Length: 516
Image (tube, rainbow, N blue to C red; front, top):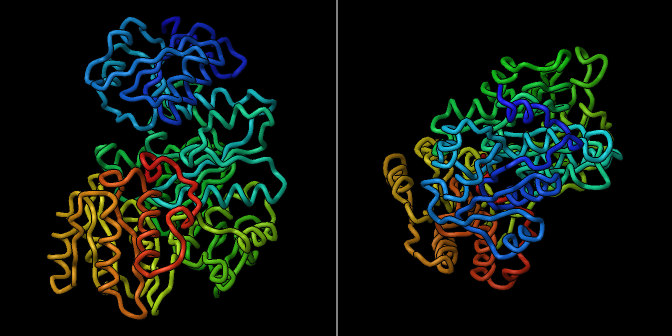
């Protein structure tokens, strides 16, 4: 073991000696800047390497004393990076694992950490470290994190939702007020880098993987690699491993995880719960895990009727509620607090958000459905749909999604720069279905055209549903812009209503990680 290896192994506290450590930070998005800012505060020598940098972050880097190299072509390491000879690299989640810079880093046998490992090592800056409750899954992460954090807050805990939800964990652990617990959303990109180095292995208080479906296979290379990354969320869990009874992958993850002795497996699902599970009995959401007589009794949390009144009754949302309730109960939150929170909680913008009902037709924005698994959940919530779909498919197959839902479709409108995969799927499985394509290249034209075409297909009792099953970056900045433009186009098409500035309040995480 080299002296550098020994030093890195010892850096497991904010109060360790980080001074003078040469660290290269790959990327200057929200995460990359938080990494650079943190390391500069610790006294490390920081070199940020990125393909692009906005003016504000460039200025701030100079203020904190970090060096910046902007190189539009990073197929080879910049000369300054080679001269800098980093002792450690901290990589932003967007960097593909086989990016040329990371291959160069591996050749030089330089340690690579992600922002999550760095934050875990530094979590003791403000008094006793906060407990971490970690959440991952293909879909539902953000809603589950928000629900869990809201339940904990209502119970009187100092809590911060953070991670892939948009607030870097490094910002949360440096908050001068400190927290009792962090609810951390983790993407597969972030989890890929977790657990590789001694001293940096997470040990969550409780953890959940909500579901697994084909997504981001272009990044991970295979479904097996994607699952392996997600499975890291359960490693070293202390109290509760929350898994989806309807998803065998999540159960297998828990069965194979090395956890702290005494940690329990807690299942959730839309069926009748067994002992140590959360589920539904006669329309009542129940906890059969955190009570003494769990073999013969259950605790009522809320009802499907109450969730319907709050706009939270879509099956995939109910599943998220059960998962969040399990995580909150594992931390001691009372059933009454959970019920009170669910009475007042509302979903974020662009998550099965009802825009208008006009002439018996409902218009729904689920732009956050950025992959087939999410779109499947959204489609299942409505009996008759004019489906607006398409975008950047990220290497996943939409054939099964189309074939599964043909029976509920009134028609479809395809958007996106590359519409061929969806077009072919409709031709195979629904040759008689009215399918329209938006051929507009200009972003301003896409949604007005899509809404006009969808409106011509819709009949009373239908739902016009934007559930793209794809990312948005081919035509929009992110899923939030796609949703905003859809909402504005709907209101313009129907007449009256909110304009683009009033359609929704967006609290969004960067799409590059949100669906991972």
